[in-house]
Length: 273
Image (cartoon, rainbow, N blue to C red; front, top):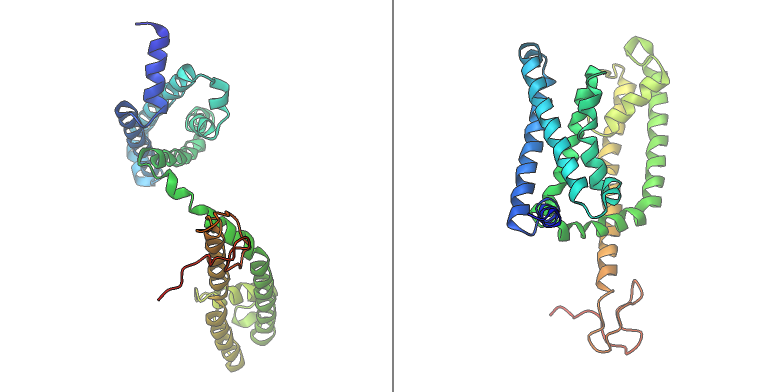
């Protein structure tokens, strides 16, 4: 068989998931990646490591060799090897191999193999989930739009926990576990977020009153960032809708709050009966 034909067929199998061979290759690769992750996770359990360290090491070396061969095949059959090598997936594929080599010199480096989970991103290509990722543009737009509001909110929360933490340090004191202002601020954060570890608790009546106020305040403000983000998300989705053509004159862009087309005056949205 001609070498060029062989490289072309190999390229179709390795890089293109639209073919039956490509889907089988990607599906098999994902299963191998998942198995490799399971081995790394099991090896982190001390009891398993003590009894099966050598076996797990041999298995992991087998996975590393497989990934090294796969990486070599991708470089071999790629029309532009350097472009692949420095692409996102190319770097991820390389990172799947490097920790196994580093483990020869640094034993703890084997746990870096967990970064192979990033390679599971290929599942979006195999299962044709790529178009759904476009919806992430709504989230990014909402995050950008709400950035300043959320920063102001976080500054306000930091001010509150500092004030409450300082008050509790003054009122409760070291004898009740509030040994410093940072310790008091830690307690305020835990209480304000309604986590409530219970490692530090107020003992005095005044301290318990302030604790109640902090908890009520936490319930009051915990929904604020959600509301800010939801409002911006709605604006982003509306903005996307406004990129559609006007049904009459086909103009394809309008002001963010526009209800009518600026060219022909036609309503941009149908009224709900």
